[in-house]
Length: 81
Image 1 (tube, rainbow, N blue to C red):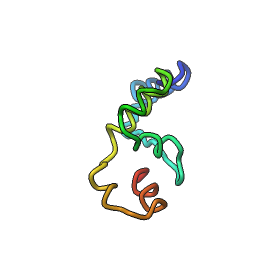
Image 2: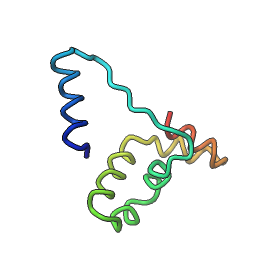
Image 3: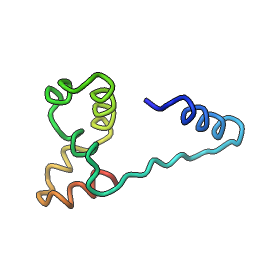
Image 4: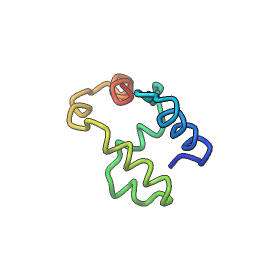
């Protein structure tokens, strides 16, 4: 999860400043995105907080579409898009 100050900043922006869109940016060759593409059993062997974060990322990936991309760099780029 997010640390308290980050979470509080987002809540303030949304609640008080009426921010309607929050964009989470990714970057090419992101280790977390690569790790989230591992199978669930492997992810669950990680420390609890890391596993929770990776499973959250994994839930947002279109793994079926990503498996159709055979070039690893292209796959990484698509995963963060």
